[in-house]
Image (cartoon, rainbow over all chains, first blue to last red; front, top):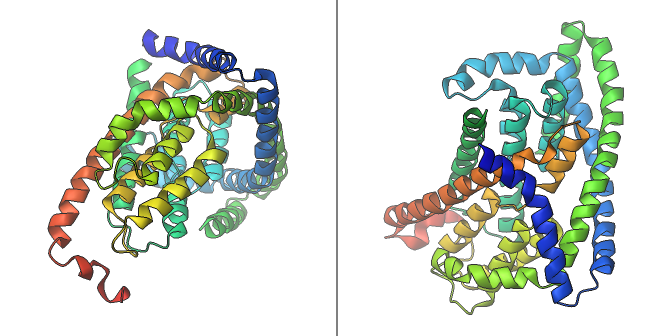
Length: 175
Length: 208
């Protein structure tokens, strides 16, 4: 348990240190580079605002109306059968479809259960280790006009399910 | 797709809200959530700026190329249909490394370039090659060094230890990537057996 915890704590300082050192060794003007990159970060976040507003309102309405509780209640038996908490099912369904929508859901889950709760950590781990499969496949195969994608979707969905199960189990073992 | 999901969630939410008599909750959810979205974006700004800034240093220092060279032996094994010195291989490797560093803006053009190059090696232009499938399976299993957005999101949510998920994300992501590679290879073999004889017919009447 502590190894994973230590890695998590040490990761960011270590990586920043390595990157800055390699920048200096390669004669990069590190602070100038940092500023240019940071500007790009602002643009990324600002562009995200309209999407987040739209999707967080939808998620908020869906939860406040009680519709989410009904859905979770219906699917709870199915999910508990495979040991997955039903509260992450919306995330599990949304994650392959839309990255910003799942971000809105993760934020909603952390609001309700707390970021350091079991559910909160599982949700973050799923978010960080799976991808927007449908979107990615559409863009990449669409770009070269391929219509027969063979087994790609099945294989990608299998890895997605594996990711969810591992995320659920890893926190059960650690906690 | 999002058009349906978004409007569906809102409409179902409103209807269920009326039936449940929770319309006042729904109304305040509309206002609170739109405010929360902007608060969240502002909370994300700091960490995202920091991280894209650090990553810019990494890319100017040539770290992407260095790591790309390190993982080349592995990628040669993963994409048997791509000649080693073919430009497709370079784009694939660069895309994987850019994704690994969380450089989404750099990763997508590289990935599209990789698909274009792979398409040049494709004898049947309407059907994906096994190398394309493998590339996208690995791409969607997403190995990422630091999930910066998530850490920012956790810290915005008031987490006492926002980075605590990094280790778990690494373990999980390694599991999904290994699964993806294994499943991809197995499917590729199975697909060949099933459709191997009549290769041109896999596309049915659609192709020609």
